[in-house]
Image 1 (cartoon, one colour):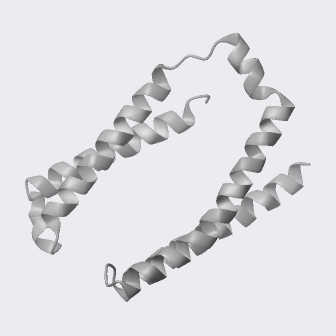
Image 2: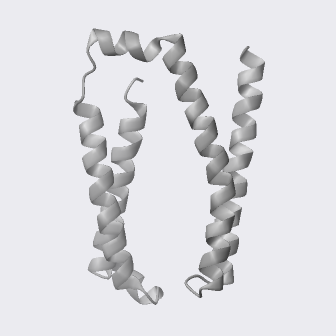
Image 3: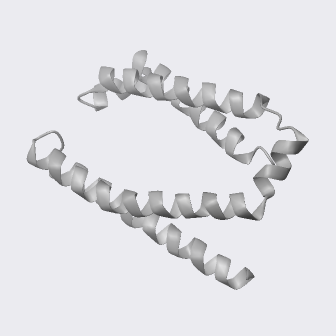
Length: 138
């Protein structure tokens, strides 16, 4: 499926929109369960809007033949992979530092810091799995 990222983005946007409605109208007492239910509705609503807009634009965009050839050019693929690797390396350094700074400033609890670090560990594990799969296929 060529549009898999666009479909995933749009699906997440719809899921976030449903969660926004649940928090906004307190469906099933979900807003009462969280101390910041109203803030969750606004945050999820903003994320839902951004994801839906990005997903729709990604689905509507039809690349030209020249763009398809350019995207599959080995040099451009190598440049994209190098950029992704550098961004991931920056991500793995910045996330724990930002989590620590937020904790020190009192903007997030220790549980939040641990959740952020657990998320980073999960992403790094996925990175290792992707490398292992790529090595098997090459």
